[in-house]
Every structure is written in C-alpha cells, then in structure tokens.
Image (cartoon, rainbow, N blue to C red; front, side, top):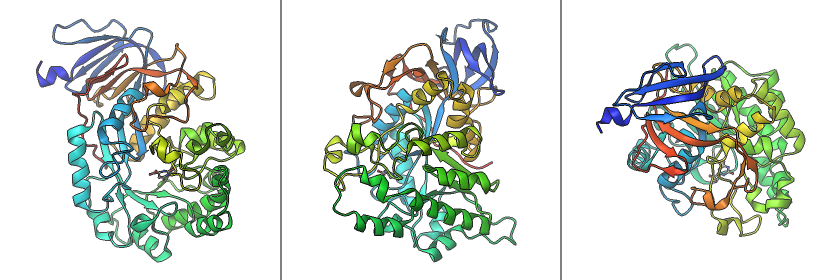
Length: 451
Ligand code: DOR
C-alpha cells in the first residue's frame, strides 16, 4: 500500500461526536492522515482504495491528548520506556502525549530535548511533545529550546537541579518585559507544592511508616501556598501559566475567585476518583505527588471541572515498579500509571450521569489542544488530523493487571468495572490499536506548538 493509502480510511456508521457537542450516526473519510469529510451514516460511497472500519455500536471521539506523563526514557527504562508507554497510550485511546523532563539526563538543554525527539521518532506509536525543565542555571535554554510544549517548574516534591523554590530564580523564569509587546510568553507549567513546608513536615513526621501519612505531610496548605505564589508571578508578568494536577479544594476555590485569562489548570482522574481511603486498600500504590486528598476535595474538584475553573485532564502517568512500591513508606517512590485507564474512567463517570461524553472529550482532547496551542487536533471536522478513538460505551469489564501494556504492570484501578474502553485507536489515519491488538509498526509525529 502506498504511504497515502496507509493513512487513508473510511469509518462507517459510528456515533460521531461533532464540534458542537452533539453525537449522531455518521461516516468519516480520512485521506492522507487528515479528516476529509464527516457525513450522515451511509452517505459516502465505498471506494476500492479505502479500507473501511465498521463502527456500528461504537462512539467516535477525538484521540486523547494527555498533557502530563512521565515516560522514563532515557535513564529509567526499568520502569517504562517510550515504546512500552506509547503501546499503553494506543490501548488507552491516547493519541498524543506531553512528557516531563525528570528523566536521566534531565531534559534541560536542547541536546537532551533532541535526544528525546530522536528516540520518540524511532519508537513511539503515538504523537509526542516534550517539556523543558527549569533549573537555576538554564534560563537561555528555556527561552530558545524548540520544539517544546512549555517550561516545567517543580516548585516542590523534587530534588536536584529541577527543584526551583527560590523566589529570585522563580522571578527570573517568569519575567517578561511588559513594555515589549513581542516579549516571549512561553507557557510555564508548575508542580505546585511548597518545598519549605514539605521539608518541615517530613522532619516532623519522620518516624511514621503508614503511607496514609503522605497526605498529612504534603498537606493542602503546602499545595495552596505554591499555587498562590505561581499565580502572583504569572499576574506580575502576564506570563502564561498552567497549574499541573490541581489537587485541593482550596486551590480550586482560589482559581474560582482569581483566574486571569492566560492561566489554565488540570486535574487527574485519581484526584477526582480516589482519596485518602485508598491507602487502606492499595497502600503505597496510592502514593503520589501531590497526594490524594479527602472526599470533600474530590467533590470540589469535580465541581470546578464542571464549571470550567479547571480546564482539562492529565494522568500524570508516573510508573514505578512493584518492587520499588514495596519498599515501605517513606522509602517508596510517588506516582502511579494512568494512560490506559483515564478515558474509560472518565467515560464511566459520564455514563453514570456525572458529566457528558462531550465534556469528557473536551477535557481530554479539545481543551488540551487549545491550552497548549497544538494546531489541527482535538476536533472531528474536515481538515483536522485523523487522531481518533472508537470506544464501546455498552460493555463493562474490569481493569485487569494481566492486560496492561505499561511496563510497571499494575494500576491503582485494578478491579474497577469500567465502560468506554477503546476498541480502535487511529493516529494520523493509521490504525494503531484494533480490538485488543497493537500495530507496533505505526509511528506518531512530533507535535507542534503555537498559534
Ligand atoms: O507522584 C509523582 N511522581 N508526581 C510527580 O510530580 C513526579 C512523578 C514521578 O516522576 O514519579
């Protein structure tokens, strides 16, 4: 088959999610990796050169763009690598991801960024973009590194050069000359936890070995303090700011009162659906940064998402091996995988009536493309890239450890009965996942950013 034909296909009789949020039976013709036309079901004549997918009974959504993942390559491949992680993405309906800089070496220079892009081009089944990490030393790299989705600042829960909690350094990173209309305004994405408070409280609770203490040590106040600080800097310089994995009701209420037009925020499925009760059942597998919070925080975050105070959803896919997770608190690493479960978790909530399918697609694709200024993605309409997922909203089945593609081999959601699992995932017009089978020959592309 020619290159063009490999990226061309016809999706027949799907329940298509349209840009206005309505869902109706339709056909979608894809040519050369892009959507050519979306019609009523049965309106497109068969064509000999166009492979057809019978999507009867399935719902067609824009592919998920996961804007916060840790895929561990280079340097930490015993946990995950770009191939295994992108297989997990394809299975989870994630057609693009934005990856974090805490790999080895750290992604803090153009050379390290180029190395990741090269590895991804070789191994990734889905589309990819990378953050550059801020340090106290790499200001010039932060301004020029290309292509990047943004600058990642760890204000807390980090050690080494990627920890940036000094006021003067933060000010320099956020700085913009407001008298110069062309001054660069690259997005800064913050991990907002106050390091000074975390250090003090770690010392205070140093003898505790119950993992539930993690949420007490890294408390709501620590998150709120850092978010307040980032917000103040963003306002001072009118700097694009994205608050990663918002976890507390206090931060959500702060943003409800005070959120400039250039600020966005995200929440993870685990901060919506898990809380501190999870330590009782899954122990250190529930340990992440920022930590799980109370059921009341779950409720406030949900409301903030529904009201548009929180813009989109990220998984913070942060795999660690079961051996590492068995070390016993506080020696256990923080983080949990997520790309294989995020879409069914959220679609299950939609089927329960907590939100709509259209809202899920907006939070997991359309709004992410908008926030990160990723052109041509996140909408099913002519001219957009054919990054698509067909999901089954009629069948329920449990999350099973043995079916997971992530190298770490576990999920905090094992045993949860979910619907909305992907049946077919399409990246740039290529079928990368089909009824349980991956096509590992497919490769994604480097994402572009900017309007
Ligand atoms: O729980 C977490 N784990 N939060 C982070 O921000 C980093 C991540 C990791 O890389 O393991």
